[in-house]
Image (cartoon, rainbow over all chains, first blue to last red; front, side, top):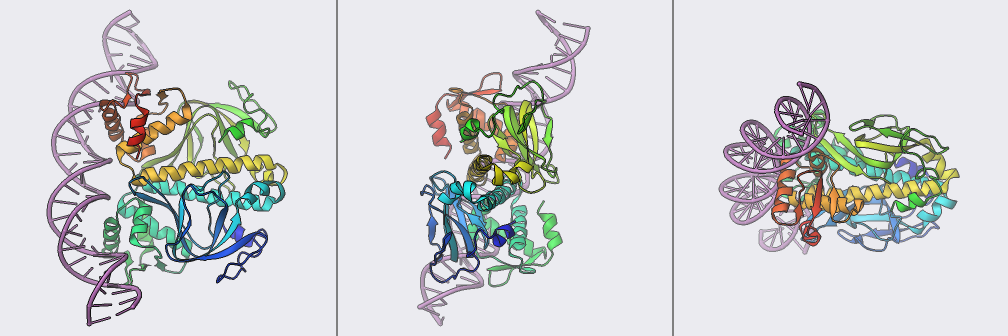
Length: 221
Length: 221
DNA sequence: CGCGAAATTGAGGATACTCAACATCCGTGG
DNA sequence: CCACGGATGTTGAGTATCCTCAATTTCGCG
C-alpha cells in the first residue's frame, strides 16, 4: 500500500533525506526523536503530519484514570497524524530512536486543489489506517488473549519481513496496551506459545522466532 | 462533520432525491433495502460506496467460527463502504428498512483529478470513520461493560439528537457485537443503569430515556 | 559485579461469559 | 379482539478467562 507513497513523486526528498539532522525541503522536514520522546499530544493543534523514516512510533489515547489504548504502531514508511480539522486526536511518542519527516497539515486542504497526487496519497494512507483499525477492533472485541498475541506476532512479521525472526521493538506494556491485555497476560500467552513449540523466545526478549507460522495462523482465529 | 457533505454541491441530488424508489442522477442512485438485507459482503468488489438517507446500517467482520464484530452503525448522513482498492473489507446490512444513495467507487480515483470537492469530502468522511474507530478501540480495549454501555448510549444520543430519549434501532445482539460483550451483559448493564436512576427503559425496549446525562458522562470513564 | 528496570511466574479474585429458565413483545390467525 | 407462538430480552447460577497483587528471575547497563 505504502509503496505508492514511497514511489510517489510527491515526496521527492523523503527517502533520500539525511537522518541525522533536521533538513528541509519544500514539502517536508526531517527530525530525529529520542526514546519515549513525545511527537505530539492529543489535543495539540495539528500543524504537521508525519511519515516514519526509521524506528517505531506508538499512538495512543488515555482515559482519565490512566488506562491507555495504543491504537497503532507505526513502522518505517507509515503515515500518521493527518487531520483535516484542528487538533490531533491521539498522542504520538517515539519507541526507541526515531526519525520522521513532517509535512504541514495545511497542505492537505490545498492539495485537493493543486496537488492531486498528494491528495490521493493522503487518502490512501488514511484508508490503510482505517482498514487496520477495523481489523484491530475485531481483535479487541472478539479474540481471546492467545489469539490476540498470535495475530499481533503475525501482523508484525508481515510488516517487518525479516524472515522467521520478528523483532519486538516495543516493551510488553506497549503490546499489552495495544491488545487490550495486561503485561502478565501477554507474557503468559507468549510462554504458552513457546511451550507449544510455535514460537521461540530468545534470552534477549526483544525478538521472537516464528517456528511454525501455519500453527500461528490457525491460532489467530 | 457530515454537514460538509450535506451542504456540498458535490452531491446535488442526494438530499433532494426521492426515497421510495430507485432514482438516478449523474452522481448517485437511490435504492431501498429491507430489514436484514445485505448491501454488500466482505470481499465483494467495491463497485459502490454509500450514503445513508434514512434508516441504520451495520458494518461488521466475522471470524471463521462466527464471532462477529460490528465496527460501526451508520446513521442518516453517514458515508460508508468507500475503498480505494478492489474489495470491501466488511459486510454491510440494513437494520430495519433503509434508503441509500450509491456512488461509483471509480469516482474516488478520478475525483482527485477532476473533482477536488468530492475528493475532499471523501477524505473528510474517511477521517471521521477513522476518528470513530480510534475512539472505539479505546472502548473495546480498555473500558468495563457498564462504561461501554454508557459510552454507547451517549454517543448514539449525540448523533441522533432527539432530546432526552434515544431510539435503539438495533437489537441487543447488535449492541453486544459492537461493544465486544454478550447480550446478557448488555442487558444487565442497562438494568443496572436503570436501577441507579441514570436511564429509564420503556416497556418497548426499543428506546432509552437518558434521565441523568451528567451521571452517564461520569460513568463513561 | 551489582543495581534498577523489565519480564516471568504464581496464587487468588473479579468481571464477564455460558448455559438455562423465564418474561415480554409482537405479529399472526382464529 | 384475544390467544397463540416465535423471537427478543431479562434474570439467575455457576464457571472460565483474564486481572490484581506479589514474589522471583532475568536483562541491560553502569
